[in-house]
Amino acid sequence: MTPKEYKYTKEHEWICPESENKGKVGLADYAQSQLGDIVFLDLPAAGTQVEQGKKMGEVESVKAVSDIFAPVSGQVLEVNQAVIDEPGLVNKDPYGAGWLVRLELSKPSELAALMDSEEYDKFEAELAEGESE
Amino acid sequence: MVRLLKKTPLNKVHHELRARMTYFAGWELPVWYASVLEEHRAVRSGAGIFDVSDMGRIWITGRNAGAFLDKVLTKRVGRLEIGSSQLCLLCLEDGGILDDLLAYRVETDCFLIVCNAGNIEPKLGWLDRWAGSDPDVVIRDKTADTVMVAVQGPTVRHLQSLKDISNLPRFGVAQTRIEDVEVIAARTGYTGEDGFEIISDATNALHLWQSFMKQGVKPCGLGARDSLRLEAGMLLYGQDMDRNTNPFEAGLEWLVEMNDRDFVGKSALLEIKRQGVKRKHIGLRVTGQGIARPGYKIVKGGREVGKVTSGGYSPTLDISIGFGYVPIELATVNTDIEIMIRSKPVAAQVVNRQFYKRGA
Image 1 (cartoon, rainbow over the protein chains, first blue to last red):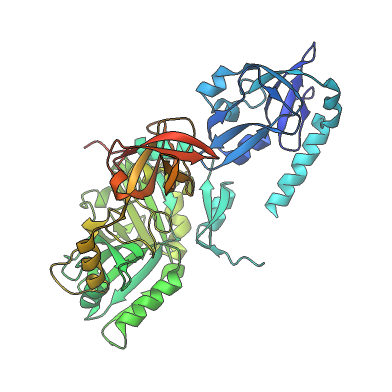
Image 2: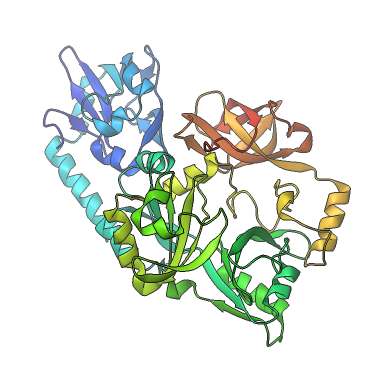
């Protein structure tokens, strides 16, 4: 299930807000299930400035490659070395151990533009419905 | 636009198993069930089953069937022993490759051709054209009436259902019974592992599939089919070769026998061989970061020199591997090249195409 306290984008990234305008960013379960086994991640290095809605990295699965967009603007504080070493963590635990980067938000007000878990669940359900038709 | 989709006799099973479905050469097929990596590893270490009913299954029968095939194929199959098979190519008059296929001699005057799914109608037209009005060559496409599964992996020879044919030699073919249904079973495959390809009437599809699943054989999709054949150094028609490539540049000269007869495309192939090829199909290994995929540019010294034709992640070797065409002067093992992976040049190396070889 999608964690309640996270915020979500239409491109299926999530951000888990922490105190002092920091937060971890990752890919939603829907993204990993669509991509299949993830085998490679290209993530921005610590110190990089990212901008909301702009590409910040790439994720490659056995079958596809996809861009990763920054859910909010800010500076990369930390990259999850565990997912670089074992990209399959994103498949196994997308909302936990499979987080990608930690950001320091430069515009915390941007969070308001993202979906909460309830909105996101609805959004995802509609996508899944369209797919099965 | 309306998409005309062909469904295999196992289509419903794939949906029931909640496979991720995709479109391949006009067919709706599973790309994976749960995980490409798990399916790939099952075939490398245990046993997997693939629905390969998209492959064309064409019966060539009649007194002149063998002579006819000798005329259209690049290898002489008319003298194959009954119960054996031969990989060969179907070439156009200009030497371009129309398909790669396996020709099985099932009986004296009965051959079975298993070819690629794509462009089946033009291929049938081509065969019909060369058969002409000879009443002793009968060509029948039974793809829609039959099912074909590939059961592949190092442990398949121990499966109860396949015990009776476990002594079938590599490339051997037999008309036999499996799980009480009539089949044609061959010791062939497209994974680089031991295994069988089994053809039966479409009405037996579900029964055969379920009996293998009950024995613990893992259902595998197109994703694993692609990564397994890539590791094993096997080419895919439509990507690694097509009408615009000839067998010599594709590195398939071992499938061409020119000394014992005349056949369609022979004079062109002799001329191509005499002149020598300008480009060559090679194996490549990405040494930098990223995955090479079909269509990516191969560059050398900042200049585009070719394209990746197949590529992906190798689960067995945990590296990024692929095939592509490069000018002949670069087609030497250990040559440094670069692959443009989304506008960034990434270091790669020319290597032998057989990335994986199974143990004896």
